[in-house]
Length: 83
Image (cartoon, rainbow, N blue to C red; front, side):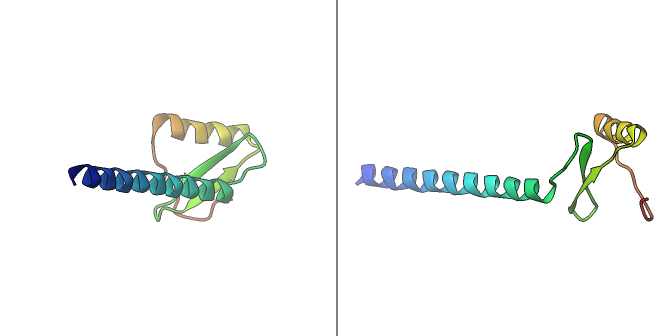
């Protein structure tokens, strides 16, 4: 009787692990599709509400600014329209 209980628990844990893995993969795939990029100079920015914005630039100056923000793990508040 104890052996059946252990088997049932093991099957339950395995099912939870598999379902969790599938959900994590699916969520990551969804984010990748939402942030598709066309060039090598792109960055994904998360806004204050948790939404993603994919940004691409041809400007080396803007690209270096984005890389510096990432490397320094800093945040930048933009209170207006970005041009």
